[in-house]
Image (cartoon, rainbow, N blue to C red):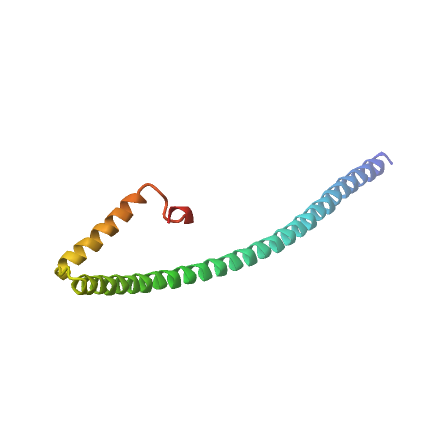
Length: 134
């Protein structure tokens, strides 16, 4: 009977050991499920962040297109202003001739260039992107 009791006790010990292992397996499964839920939550956050990044990139592209359009407009404005200055210089030269003070077109161009230089000098040190400096 002693042998039977020993075998029975060993079986009970092994069963307890197996129950302990099964309990740890269940605990590990619970941890894995929690981790999977966390991964799913993180994945959702990554998708939201990617959507935000895509929207921001679209805004950046639109801004860059506006910058290019503005640069083209600035270039066109510079050409227009150059034509206006040349026309005004020519008209000033004609006015001088009509008023009895004939001068060469080069002299008139130098006069206008000096006025322009003086204007630029008077604004030196002021940021040109502030309306008060213009």
